[in-house]
Length: 286
Image (tube, rainbow, N blue to C red):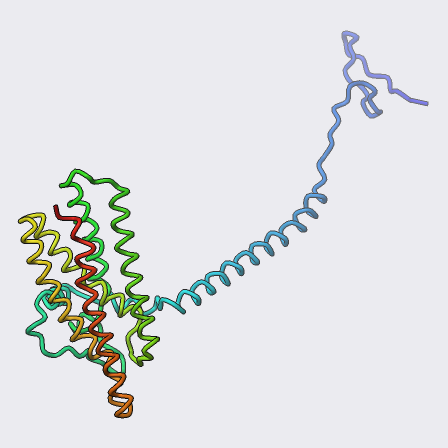
């Protein structure tokens, strides 16, 4: 049973107030509030899962980086590369002069400080990677100029030239490492040292190619011959101290036999430099 209050009529007989306390059967404006408790519970469940996933991903990234650094340092000591790039302008000038004119240089021993070789910028006899790296890049650029003067330049040909030079360099270093292992030579030469010594020949190659481009084939042969002899003398005098340093600690018979093997190995490494210099440059001069 529904009770409805009678409204109070105004002066004109109109209704002033209407009782709306009861339920309205007409069009009602329904309001469905969201459920904040459901969203709160969902966020409570999702946030810990996302934080856990982020933490797990960060842990995996850290472990992967450590594993890469450990395996990379096993073959290439990245921490020691700074030593081979510790050069300055004075050292670069002296080293280039030594590579082209090694005949008047007398002291070829590397200086040490507390059983550690001094930085290359202090000792001109210390190996470095700055000159080999810059010489390799310059050699590729000079080869591109040579191809351009012969009207046969193309990015593919330049890429083949650069990749072939790099492959020959890597094969040379691997062959020397294998020879040292077979001869059982105890030496302080590292893979980076061999890479540096093998990369010095690019300086003579650049001189030969530039001379050939400017003055013709005769200038190429004369300048390359000079640089080949210079690098041969440089390698002999440098590697002789490295490969024969342990001979004094061995017996007389063993010392004599291994001295011959080490001398042959030293001569072979030095003689291979002119061969590579000619092989990688003769086709650039026409």
